[in-house]
Image (cartoon, rainbow, N blue to C red; front, side, top):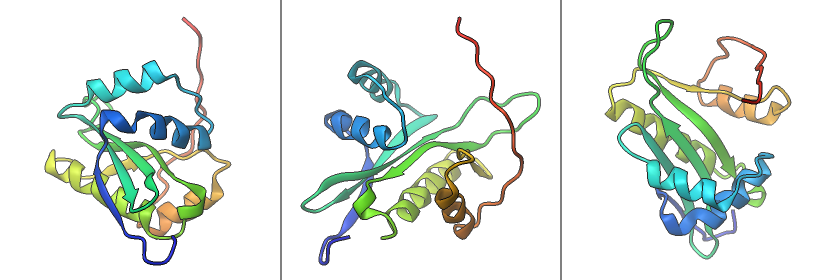
Length: 147
């Protein structure tokens, strides 16, 4: 992070949509403006998006947190469904601050744990999560069929 720059974490605003799309592209997700607008509008008690803002640079990171409905196989938990920090601001504590905010949000909703999924090719992310105290609990394949 540029010297003298400070970051803070806050809830995403509708006005952050363009930056959110740009950050998601860094993860390989090409999402439309309409999709981002719909997701921002749908946030509520079980869904929030937090952004890291650096003075002079604006929004440089995001984490999306959800509390999915309990299933027969799993209890109530919080999940971080997306985490990304702008390249030039990585390794400055911003990702850790975003995850800490997602963890606090989950605790506020009665969740005892936070789950995060990471693509097998993102080895740097795996090291990051382990450094934060996350442990790998399983590996799986994801299958999808167009409807």
